[in-house]
Length: 236
Ligand code: C5P
Image 1: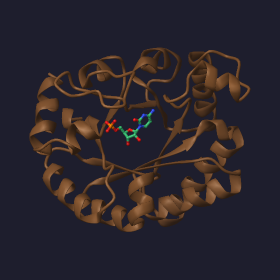
Image 2: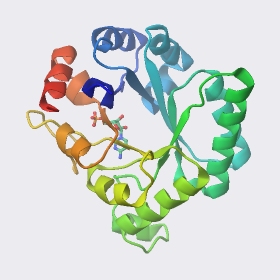
Image 3: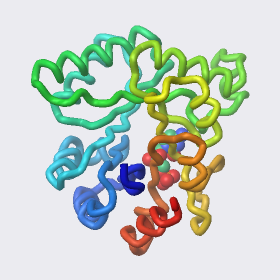
């Protein structure tokens, strides 16, 4: 895989014009774009269509967490829309995760298309030990993350989303082709904004991540293409 293909750009914008502009600029070097809650609730499936029409892949980050039947139907719908990867919350439980895998596989088989990759969100990086305790979880953040990763693997998920701090520990505990996708990435030349536990692109990939998700260091840059190329160069 070329180094640039390990970068997923988060399209955290709310207008289709910005989606088109960014994808046009970046598609020579970036192949996967993340569409999250802001863009999806602002522009809906049109945002997905734009990315796909321009020949790129969609990572739909809506973090599903619902009853198994509902999540399975959403997973089917995404298989139908040729989504490359999407997220669900592992805290939704084993049955919910299995239902998502089954729904996506069945629909992809029926349509004879590729099965979307399903990634599990473990403990959000915005939560600390006190937040976890307040919702009844007494374990350490890392202990809880590893338990949820094990459950995700058992359910047949393709991988997880993890903070850079957790990547190496997760990597030791999962099979080789289990994907680890990491946000919270900041090149050294970039402001940290609201991300606290950050790593550089090279550190994150070096600790075992398969993909890094990068938003503002690229999208808020005056020249997104140049920023991306600088990051790719730094990957060595
Ligand atoms: O702009 P920035 O590089 O911080 O964007 C990171 C992207 O990754 C955002 O779309 C954000 O929602 C997502 N994300 C994150 N931290 C997590 C999970 C997801 O920053 N723990």
